[in-house]
Length: 332
Image (cartoon, rainbow, N blue to C red):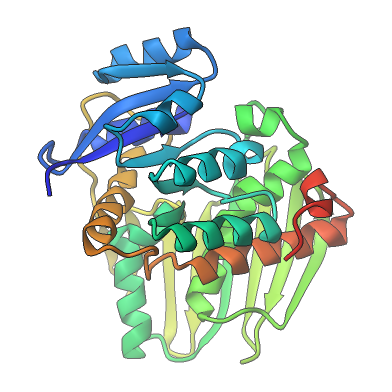
């Protein structure tokens, strides 16, 4: 296969970092050929910065572009379902920024349609493709940690000025935007769905949640959209612990024996905006592998995991009394 031809939906911060990450990969394997944004000027500026040949005002034209194989959707969460469905309808594979959709019902409908169309579709849980995650997974698989007993996860970032948060409620934004990072790691670590989900403290913008698992293990999660936190994840097993730093994009960890392991990222041609944005390159390459194989999903971020993450988020929102219009339209 020649280079996988990418189209990008949105000209915002995460889309910028995505284009930067693709630039770190061989052009023989990946090329960004088009970008679409809410406004021709935004799309044109983005295209000029990143050397993209085609730019569109609005997303419909991108869906019709026959030179695009796969679309990365970096627009605000409330648009994910509609835009992704349009891209699938046009025969495009889809990598959609997290959270995949507003709720589990939407996610189920979207992923079901992708499978029906025989097209690859994945939620952008980029964390799982970092080499540090692969190291932890191998440690757990070999039993080096022993039975997983507990994981503590903190993510606190000042995101009230971020577009996708500013356009909605900060509380719901914290649950959806930061919550997906913490929840995915908890489920990935325990490899099961929690038997109980309890909001133990905080308000909408600053949350404390416990996920309690059938083996007695507990994931203690704390998120904040208005202050910085430690941004670490500590996985405790019967034989010791592993600490991930900036756990959603970790290039460093402290291993069982106290060794600090580093996994440096390559520099992109244009500087990324978000921390370790170049690390998006790992999921980009996974998409190519899966498209080449004819797969509709990745086993690293399978459809079932995306639905489980959405289910946990829905449960948390319900306990907080946070409702979305989509809850009345899309049922699990």
